[in-house]
Image 1 (cartoon, rainbow, N blue to C red):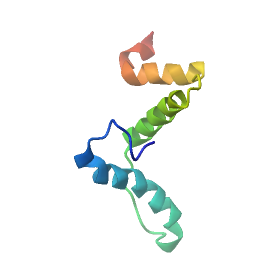
Image 2: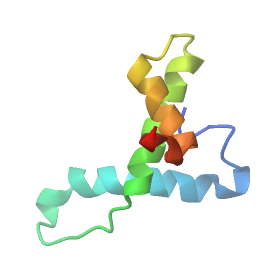
Image 3: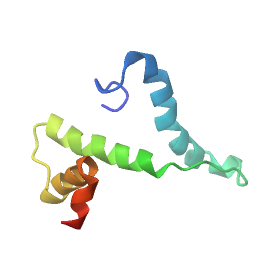
Length: 82
């Protein structure tokens, strides 16, 4: 679902795939390069969670209230103060 999402334009698909694979590849191969580093982008984690919750809906399942609240906060960050 993440790699072939309609939300990603075709011209950005290759960059999107690299963006998704880089952190997991880093941790998977960390033993080979224990001194290696990675620039961690917290926004990517949020984006992955958004796709995960949307994927629940795509499977015709109902997201839990906490998952719906997460989507609300992602859409309307100012609502976290309500």
